[in-house]
Every structure is written in C-alpha cells, then in structure tokens.
Image (cartoon, rainbow, N blue to C red):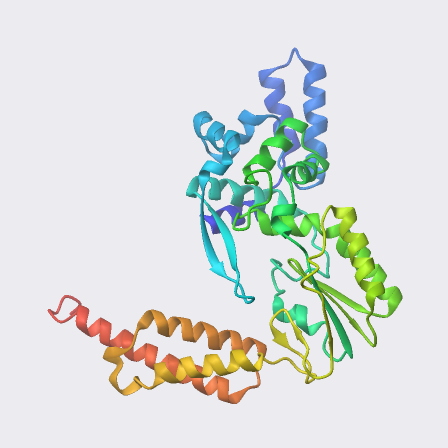
Length: 361
C-alpha cells in the first residue's frame, strides 16, 4: 500500500481545466464561489499540492467513511499502540505505532503533501540517500567536535506547530487542523507515526538554515540527524552552544543539558560512527560485539540444523551495516559472505523438509 501511494503521489498533477468544467456543470449559478474555488485550486496546483476544500473532502481523498474519519480526527490517541525499545544510553524510548487505517492516512498525507516540502541539506535523518553515516562523514578531519541533543524532541513539537505547517502550505484553517490531528498524538508529534519524520524535518528547516549560516561564518561544519546536532572545526566553544540554544528557542525547542559533549583527539564519535582516525569505523565496543555474535552463529555452520534463521538474519543485517560504514574492510566482507553461505544452507534444508512428501516434484 505504501508503494502504491508513493507512486500515485509522484505522478500527481492538478488539472485546473477539469475542475473548471466540474464547477460549470454542477454550480453555474454561483460564479463568485466558483471563482474563489478555482483561485484556490490554481494556488495549490502551483505548489504541487492537492486542493482540499473541507473535512468531508479530505475524508473522501483518504478513502475513509464519515464515521471512520470522525473517529480518527476526534480522538487520534485511541488509534495507537505503544511499545519501548532500548536506547544506547540504557534508557528506553517509547514508540507509538498507528493502527492500519491511521497509518494509511498518515502515509497519504506524507506522500501527497509533506514530501513536497524541501529538506535542508544539513538534515541527514529520514532523508532518502542520507543517513547517520553521511551525517558523520561531514565532520571527518576536524580537530574538535561539539555534539548536542534536543530535549524531548518529538514531544516538544506541538499540534499548533503542525497545524501552522499545513496552514502555511495554503490549506484553510479547518483542513489544516484536521490534517494536524491525523499526524499528532495527545497534542504532539508521535515518534512512530508515518508522517512524523518529514514533519520533524520541516519543523527544523529554519533552525538548520540558521545554524548552517552561523557555522559558515565561524568556519565550522554543521549537521543534524533527527535530534542529534553536531558542529566541528579547528575549535568549538561555549559560544557555539549558546548559538544553538538561541536558534532552538526560535523553534520552541531546548537543548538537553545532560547531553553536551566536546570531543578532541582520536576518540570522536558522531551518530554512532567513530571518525577520530580520519576515516569511518564502527566503535570498538560495537565491533567486538558484532564479531562475537557472528562467531557463535558460524560455529554451527557444519550443523545448520541447530542454527536459528531469525538470529542469522539479524547477524546479516549487522554486518551489512558494518559493510556500509567500512566498505573496504575485507574481514567484514568475509564474515558477511560466510553468513550468507549459512543462510543458503538453511534455505536448502527448509526447502528439502517442506518437500519430503514430493509436493514440489
């Protein structure tokens, strides 16, 4: 369903003449009203956005019934389930997963509306072709790095700010409010919502531009990966922290005072990537853990019956990530190839077991 929404959205175009014909056929006596509608349609067409006149129109575009749309927009908090995942710090992060219908609506809003907004070049999170790896690469070779963290990032982006985004896009206040309701949870941006990643980058666009200008004036490099901010250069100082605080204040956000790190020397880590050696590496502790886990899996290579296919996929994912960080590491490539061999053995074994009665012959 996601791919179909994206495909349709990428080919979406507003046909103003078709709308004009529709109004002439269905409301020829209300010429002033038609002129207002057509002006609105032309304005949205110039922005590549779908015109949405009112709540009932939005509900039809989303493919929901009036009852379903009413429930989604009146009490969106009832359409999520929550779970936690561990953070690197040892704490837990709460993820809010929308129900299938709300997820479909958020994907539609994301594809047809939010993806039409440009993302700043300094933003590396939730952007196609960018990642924590491209984010870390920005700061390779610099003597000092300042890493900061935004406090309660998603929870601090309120529904008012989300509504303003849709209103500034050109939608009438009632439609902007309903769109914001579909994309919010308990009055803030939900971490786990399909529309939240792009909304977070839109919210931070002015901040990114301000900090990019500041960094260039100071001879520094700036990047942001979701709520992680990094500034690097020959020398970073408390002056740079103050600049970040002031820029965040303009956006209605604050720094986490417990996550301010000045990094010098060979030990420099940015968004989980070690760059102190002048090239990108996985941090030592993570490399050791990945190697040990892969060793346990490969120990059973000769007796694949005892191998866990789900665990094997996890190992392959870890080493695929390691390869993306260190593409020239031949030892990583060798282990990755061995894991793939084990996977092929398991696939053949499972195929043979499923066909023991000759159903595939």
